[in-house]
Length: 166
Image (cartoon, one colour):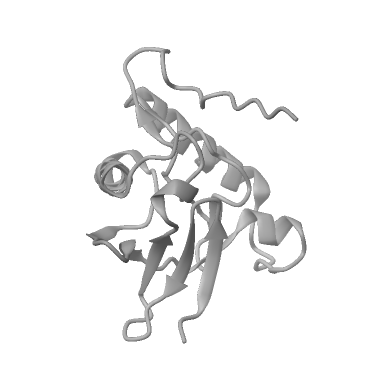
């Protein structure tokens, strides 16, 4: 059985059985995806492009290896990070080394987000569950690019508003 690494709105992240350095983001059925979520190819392409930017701008994201789409299965194969979510840290489910510093962490995260915006990428779902802390270096990673857009104008950079009535 695969180890569940994480859960997000539209998918589960599971560890590879054969290679501990790889995980798979396995998507739910298309009809069960939240409004505004990118299709799998678009998400993988955006993450690949941001990964390439990261080498020069300091934005750290998991490397995408490939994606699979067929009638029964949709998944992105990517690097499994040596990291824990900021959410788990803040809720006491994970402990960081005593050398970890919140101030340098958030400064590096801010620089990363600014670098994305300078290159016209807008995450649109940035929260403590989508920010990871490298357990070896204490540096941030940004994950889950399902809602991310690339836009040269202000139009479309905000998530669509969903009104629930009833």
